[in-house]
Amino acid sequence: MPKVNNEPKPKRHKKFKRPSVKKSQKYLITQDNRFIYAKYGDTTANELKFFYYVISKLNSISDKDFQLHEVPISEILGEVLSHESEDNYTYIKNLCRSLSKRILEDESLVYDPVTKKEEEIFEVMAIFKRIQYLKRKAVICYQLNDYLKPYLLGLSKNFTQIPLQHILPIRSGYAIRIYQILLSELKQNRNELTRPLTQLQDILCVPKSFYAWIDFKRNVLEPSLKEINATTDIVANYRTKKERQKITQIVFEICYKDLQKRKDQAKDKKQQRIQMEVIKPLTELKDKTLAYPTDPLDENAIIALVYRGMHEVKEVKGKLQVVLTLEEANNPRKKQPLIISSANQIEKLKTMHENYEKKFFIQNASKILKNKDGKGTAYIQQIQENLKKRKEEEKAIETKATPTTKAEAVSILEKIKKRDIGDLFTNNTQEDPPNHN
Image (cartoon, rainbow, N blue to C red; front, side, top):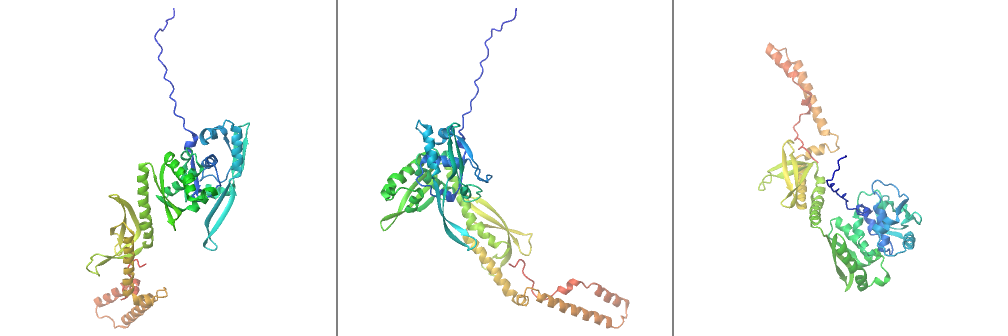
C-alpha cells in the first residue's frame, strides 16, 4: 500500500502586496514663472487641476511639440478631480466645454534686441488646441495650443516645479493660484512677497463684487490662506500697507513647514548672497595685480599679488567665506591665501588694484609716453642705438694695431665671440612691473 503522509501541510505565506502609488503622485508641474502670474479667467478648481495634470505629463526638456494625447476617465475621476456627481458623462462633457473656452492672458515685459529696450507685450491665446470626450472608449483626447510652448517647453531658467499631489487636495481655485505664486517666490529664496491689491485681484480674475477690500478678504484671501496652511507644504500669513487710509498692498510672509527645508533654504540664501556680493564682483579682478600692504604703518611696505580666478567657498562656524588664492607677481610659484566674506572687502581689493596702477604709471610715465602708439617705439630706438654702438666697437677692434702678444689676440677674439643678440635689448630704462592690467 502506498504510504500516506498524514503530517499537516505547511501554511503558505500570503503574498505581500505593496501599497499602490497613484500615478499623480509622481507628476511634476513645470512652468515658466510668467505662466504662474498669467490670467486664466474665473477658472474653477477642477478645471485648474485637469490643466495642471496635463502639464505634469509633459517633459519640459525633451518634448519639442504638443502631441494629441488620450487620458482615461477613470484616472481623471479617480485621482485628479474632486467630483461627487453620479452622472459622469454630463460632468465630463461640461468640463470639456468649459476648458475649450479658457484663454490665457499674459502681460509682461520683453527685451527687444533691435531697440535694446524692454517693451510691454499683451498676449491672449486659447489654452487647448483641441479637446474631446469619447464616451465609448471613456477617454478624453486633448492637445495644447502651440503658442504655450515658451511657457512649458525648453525651460532652462526662471521656472518653477510643483508636485501635482500638492495641488490636488486644494478645493478652491483661488487657493491653487495663490499657492503657486507663493511657492514660486519661496523656491527663489524669498520669504516675503509684496503685491498691489489691484494687481493680485486682476491675476486671480475675481468678480467685481469682490473688489472691495472687505469682500476680497472675506471671500478670497483668508479662506485661501487657511486652506493653503492646512493642506500644502507651506505656511503663509499676510499684512497690509495703506496709502491715505486705503489698503493698497498685501505683504505675504511665507516659509516651508518642514524644518529641514527651512534649514536648506537658509543655507541657499547664504550661498546666493556670497555669490552676488563676493564671487560675481571678483570676476572684475581676475588677472589684476594688487598692491597688498604688508605693514599698516609703512605705506611703502607692499607686495604685488595677482588674482588668477582661483577661489574656494568654505563654511566656518555657520558663516560662508570665500578663500582666494593669490600669487606673487615676481614669483608665481609662491601662493598667498586671502579670506573674503563681504562686499566691503571686495571694494578694498579694488582699491589695492587702483593703488598698484597709480604707482606703476608714476614710475613708468616716460616709457609709456615713448610707447604711446603701442608699437614699442622706445624699445626699437634702444636696439638701434645698441646695434650702432656694437658696430663702432667692432670697427675699433679691426683698425687696432696687431696684438703684440698671443694672449692679447685670444682676449680680443673671445670678446667678439661672447657677444649675443640679447645684448641688443639691454637698456637702462626701468622694467615693467609684471601683470600690469
